[in-house]
Image (tube, rainbow, N blue to C red; front, side, top):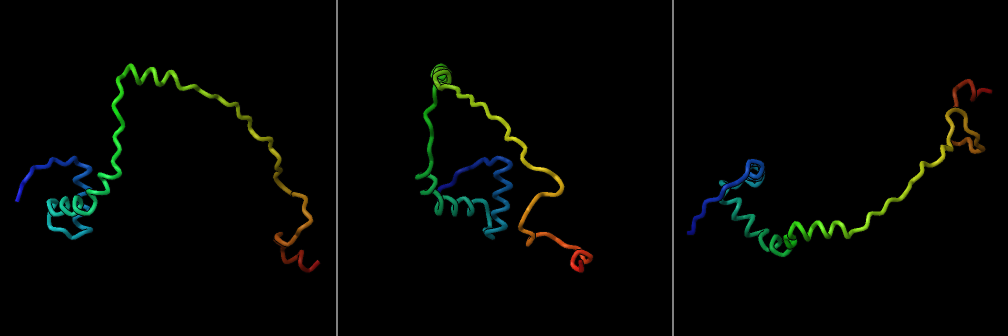
Length: 101
């Protein structure tokens, strides 16, 4: 069996320990083996690395992208608090004294 030493960041180690409890695997080694065997092909197929731009290229690209500013005005307030005129009274509450009237 081939062996390798792996250094894991703190947050990743916490997730690994959580996954150990969830999966009931015995060690991080088993967990990593399961992850590589089950999810390795998916990671490889979906991994996208963008080419690294030179800082000068990145700055020139940023300058060539136009900036569009659109003025947006707030809508006019068309509501009132209090009594609202309505002809449909099917959804209005009534008090017992109104029912007797």
